[in-house]
Length: 122
Image 1 (tube, one colour):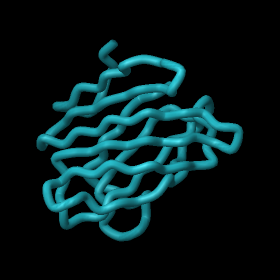
Image 2 (image 1 turned 90 degrees about the vertical axis):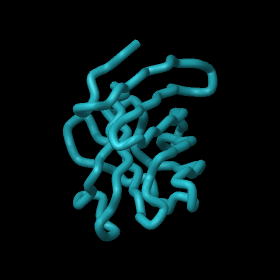
Image 3 (image 1 turned 120 degrees about the vertical axis):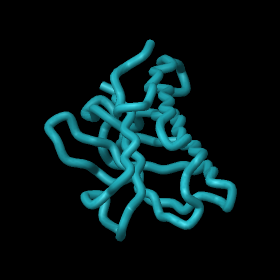
Image 4 (image 1 turned 60 degrees about the vertical axis):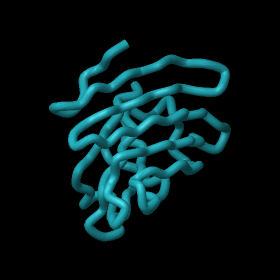
């Protein structure tokens, strides 16, 4: 199923399975994000894999609430080849979320994120 995404990007909801909600996003300039999101009693577990990102930058990950606002799930710096795999968690319930976001951070604040890749999930 193809969902609407940012200009120049394709978002694919690859399905729900016992291991969670699978989503993928490819976008300009060659960046891609894939994730498995699993609802837990305490919130949401996120298994994230990225490629094509700037190895010298810090990126933030969050879930966007249905009513607006973002709840951070963590941050990372890609390996020298622009890839990274990581496990994250947030107290935000998957069912109360409308998007997963990954963005370059100019500082440590998700609110100031730039180059946003957003994957609609709800």
